[in-house]
Image (cartoon, rainbow, N blue to C red; front, side):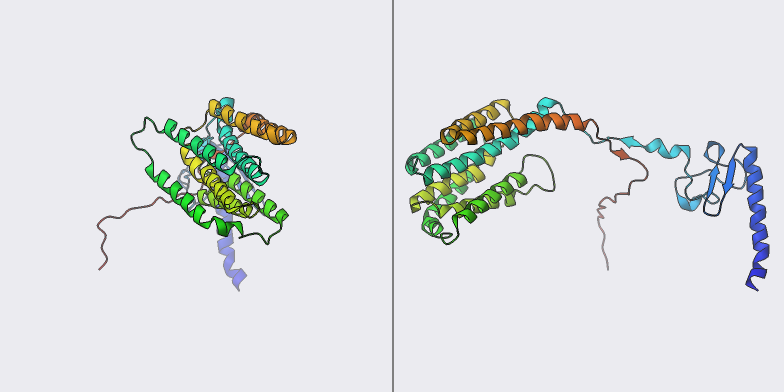
Length: 327
């Protein structure tokens, strides 16, 4: 009964198909029908008759067109690499120099622990040297500035006083843990510090608090391997200067070849006095970060191809409604 009633409808659809084929053939159109899909090719993207409207870029107003049909104007909105900024090799090297600066500070911090642990230098002399160096940088960078960051000095003093009070506790905090575990934990924490540090690039992975806390946690783990509470106090003071104060002091410098060479030279001289193997590894790492990585970054950056077009998802902007009251 159902099939019998559908015969007039099927015959009507057959007539419409034939009329569509005849009308489209007059305009050099092609209609191909199969069991799975229907592909329609129109002259200038539309059928020029009174039955179908010109094709538009919305599905609900394109009656008579297949769902997969697109007009020639569909790709006119295609754009490539809208937000891509081309960098030169020098700019890439300057960007990589920020990573090298942070790596040099971590190496200097590790060498300070080695010198204190092996009694290669007096703790008082090391404390005076590191504090004087930080104070000189502070004066050079903020000499002509009207707004001196006094809050930085207050925060540093608070850290130092807290470290002096808690140094006996930190000395015995991790004594029961094996030395290998302490060294492995400190190494991992320093790597976390380098990975999540804010190098001036807006990225999801950047976390200033995680980077700082990881570095301080690694420093606290190493405190139990020092000899006296005064050694611990000096070591904590150096840790605060390296990980809490130095990012703020060096922020006005940004990237500079002169600062890069200064950091690399000082770190290399300190490394070569400890171990020639360590100094060699340091030089190879610096060359890899500052020469090889920028070169391949600039080379591969030319192959970047981002496309933007009408197929992108719509982004709903925040709408601020003023004077809206609900009774």
